[in-house]
Image (cartoon, rainbow, N blue to C red):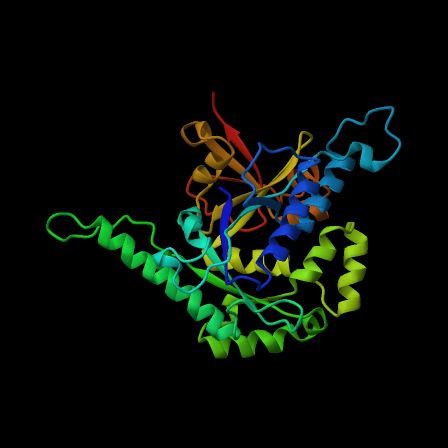
Length: 340
């Protein structure tokens, strides 16, 4: 499964800047891992996960048959395939969108099928960016939330049958979990924890629903290499980009985790719901694996790294065989035993 997130907000709150930064990351990702052509308002980006690099390094040393022409460890590393997040962006909403005002109303259907919604609200002070209806983070959020609620009511009215009953399977916005992305000036990022607390209190939501970002900073980071990005973040007094923090909170909000596979062909992260058993987790790799499942060989990420791969994990008793009902944990490294 892939996490799908819808981005909404008033015009000029930084949605386009943020989304363009995501598209830069997508282009860099697609250069190594091609995807089919996607719509301009959809961006697919990798989930940052440093565990994958560590696994690839271990596999390069312990698992792979070394090519005699290889001169460095990087030449022997298997390809890395991270989990992905699909971001769906729509034009800025305005008051009255549910009645057809503005451009955003035409694209509301694009975010009805997402797993979660991110409300981008304006917290930056650039006087050169016209507010276009934006007043404050609280009012920005309440305006867009109201439009989504009114759009839900309109959908319910249209779905009523002759007896006045409403279809219970409607993809209503109110059913979806949401996060708040407070778009601030770059200089404010070092005070993110304080701003999260203040924003949560003002908007009447939990702190775990608020992420402080700087869309401008995300745009700069998208064009940097991994090491340069780390230095840039360190200069700002933070350790993770806004995108990383947003994805982590989205995973937590939706109860998602990742398990890992590590072999000579690839090192990969797979997204599943927390509480998924081994048999159904195998189905994320291929649906046929569900009915052909025999066992799952499992070792923790830390165990896999400390033992130097599968061989060392087996020799030291860190790898164990689990049945179909085993509940997969975040970071489990798994090799599924599948029948013919």
